[in-house]
Image (cartoon, rainbow, N blue to C red; front, side):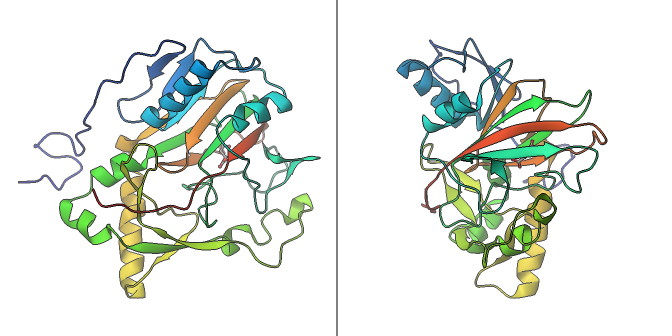
Length: 299
Ligand code: SIN
């Protein structure tokens, strides 16, 4: 019988099927958990990467969903150059950017802030027709304690669903709306609202274009409702999925240091930033890499 409890006597709620990856030859990769996250060593992002290093960084991202680098004192230009190795830049529809560099989004909170970026579980800009593939965040100013970011594997969240729930969700679509998220959000920073913000319909279960794995692709930040079912059913199912996805079993938590970098894959990861460091300052820049239109392919 399938165990339906988070805690029970039939073993873990989620049995992660681990497959050993081929050894890396140009970087060192240390996993944070068996399920999600790895730290990358023996690499200097202030210098151009070799083709072999670039391929292995890309493979490490595909295998671990989010990867972390320490002690990378990169300039804005080096940050953009690193991001450009993985695709075109995605320009944020609302958030402030560094003057003259629209692809360099500001991530900042201090004692006078009225909000901090990413405080709710979300996937970046999933309201776009072609949401970003990945985001690369460099934090240059850290609070003395706190300001961690949590990342959750949407592969694990999908795989841990019952077969009945998977069958119900496979092939279904959901509506993602930027309007309630962005309108007025950056007004205090001088951002003038656009006439409209993006919205899109995406599969609830998304097939990753690189790994071919299935990932849950609804999030608290942007997903307003499921398409093709009554509103009360949509609300109840999304509530269940949002709570399910937040199970710490599917997560890793990253503790930032000055000049750490996180590179996450928005196609299979959600994240949430902790604003527990007020009145201290946390500051950095994010380069976001463009992605494709999400699709679902039955396996
Ligand atoms: C974000 O990009 O959502 C912010 C993440 C963070 O500040 O850790």
